Image (cartoon, rainbow, N blue to C red):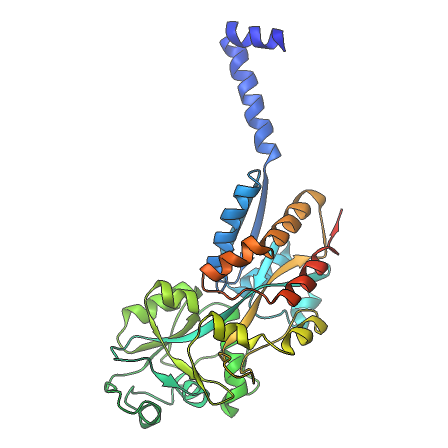
Length: 347
């Protein structure tokens, strides 16, 4: 150590070599984890991974919001270390996997029907009317069906411009899952990709749809709640199964995952739809969102992913979810998920 110190002081080339060696060792000591998928939870994941790095400076988690379909494809191809989706993987997607994958619910969010109209109060909409809007049947905002639900509100004679997702999307899966439960026209049509009617417009990601709505008078689209709040976009109060017109917020979204739902989701390996909930006070287009985690992982990256999951599902992570307008998981469900995380195998 003494000779090395003398060499550094007396020999600039040796100093450069040693410093380069230290830098190289630091690069190899750092762990880079790549994930991709849903844009629905992208705001909270981006926040989580930045905060997690403060607890583990040697770990960087790079997350790309490319849509649930893209995340599943990249996980299947092995080009990312984990995926993210707002809709559980179907039988065909599961069959294509190289090994078992856990669905780890992280938070609960809401898909809202957002619109670009200058109104004195939020629109009230039913599932039937929303289905007609997104089928292209309702073409003007002062349509009788909308006016009947909103007495006293002056609705403009403005064309309805429907904005949808262009990519394979879990947000689309949640929204169309809801539509399939409230409208015969949408039965068996739910999915990450949908053949929307001719005349609708499309963009990639929740941010893309929010941008379309923001730019066009009379536009309407479906996006995750945080994107509406961040862009100061109005969104509808939607009638739930109990007949109440409900605003999307943490309380109404949490209500959709209450009661017997917790036992059911645990029984179903954490994969369960909670749209169109029967629970009083529940917002009807609420959903869990999931991280897709390989059951068996290399020890170096796997141990970091496990550490991240424990942190995200712990108090620090779930408190941040509340700050970002996502609802945290109920404690009983969180305990069950953390128990599942313990079963991840590290090679």
